[in-house]
Length: 222
Image 1 (spheres, rainbow, N blue to C red):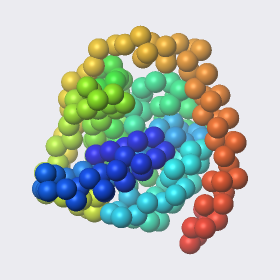
Image 2 (image 1 turned 45 degrees about the vertical axis):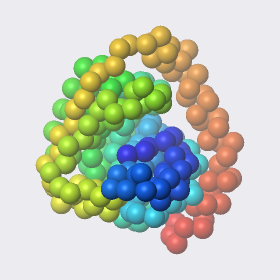
Image 3 (image 1 turned 135 degrees about the vertical axis):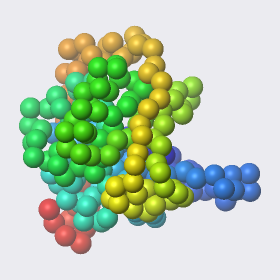
Image 4 (image 1 turned 60 degrees about the vertical axis):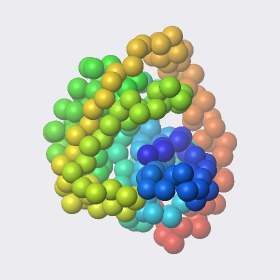
């Protein structure tokens, strides 16, 4: 699955590549890792061939994102909920705990995060009875495929995955935790945390008119 930040570019690249014979029978699912205003990074999976432009524009509140994704038949859940403080749901003061029950899954294994972070995420999923996902959070080629989500169902497209999650098919999330890098340590330092928050909120504010425009074009208003 490809889940780029606020972008379907990687997914669209695959849409062009998959027509080549060498990729016959190879499945790639399409998702987005969305940067919310008040709950960090949220993984979103929409039905096949549905690319909502508004998911390319960071800065929506979690409540609005939940309504839009579910309205169009998609599923969503927090990435690394106890991970980097600048972008993880459980470290946002405005995170509404009632909204956790509206998630469809929780990423409980992330190769970038510590064993403690992943264990807390697993405990959260168990508390709310939610399915568990895993993510390599690659960002760099050498880290692709270090996590796995095992699903006891045949998955050949987004619709299959959405159906499996909603039907309660058994899932297992696991993989290999990466070594702690200098870059990761910088993200956890207070300068990294507040620097990213200022960047994310500032950029979200700057492009808010563009986001509102695409929100108004949806067949409903949240």
